[in-house]
Image (tube, rainbow, N blue to C red; front, side, top):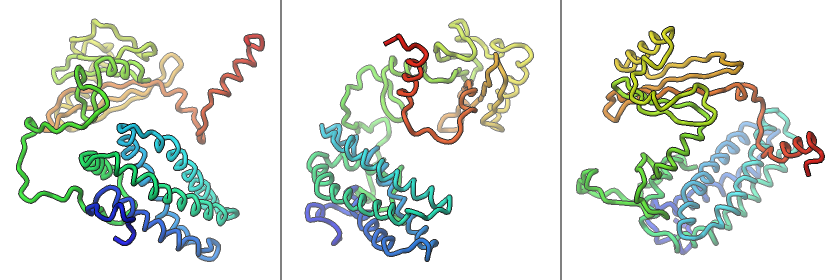
Length: 340
């Protein structure tokens, strides 16, 4: 564990900070090899090393989605702002190199590679001397344990999964889920909130989220009764409160009832899980999908119908990575020059 600074040497194997330093050692090794490679003379070696180094995205994602939120809970918001921006700058450099590789234009790759090396070296210096020691001072043992669970969902740069953390308990005492009282420390009260698979929401938040989603949602339960639809201002197909509790076969025009009933039949049998259609409706292209809903025991619990206007989505080409609000404002001013 010679790659560990003194403040981290007493941490157990598998601890998130130890894993970060294991990745740092890998990054240093890859950078040392990459700086010596001429892409024109040994493209295959360069490409292999570059792809391994590009896995630093997993490290960035763990910091942004795991470490930074825990630091925010303890009042330290700096990394979420400054360091995240640093990540994005490095991501852009990787993106530029990949574009050049794909276009077989190697001009400038050496310069970009050297910039990546400098930026990653600077970032790891900040991590080692500021980010990680401060995080160890702020976060609790429970924080690190919870963080490791989420880290495993994102992944690591390492070729093999790190040592489990905390270490598995021999013959652990079984605790029935109904008796498990473990709760994460959260910056808000759970009173009046609905427990979701991940997270907690008030009924108001849940309703607002569903209302502003750009899709029509309708939930039909296992008894073929409509139990929910989201109420939004821009629904593709209008709904009213009278639909709640109604049999779904009475909610569709006669010409489509047979199709709806067949979908329900196949979903209930388990022979199908999805069905989709796309139609032209009032000059718009509408995508309609049905999803069978099943519980953890694979018991049929109903179906979700989702309709979405995809007219504008179908027009998308290329990429847009920039906020275009300023362009829209300029366009509005041009249409109405005396408005300001």
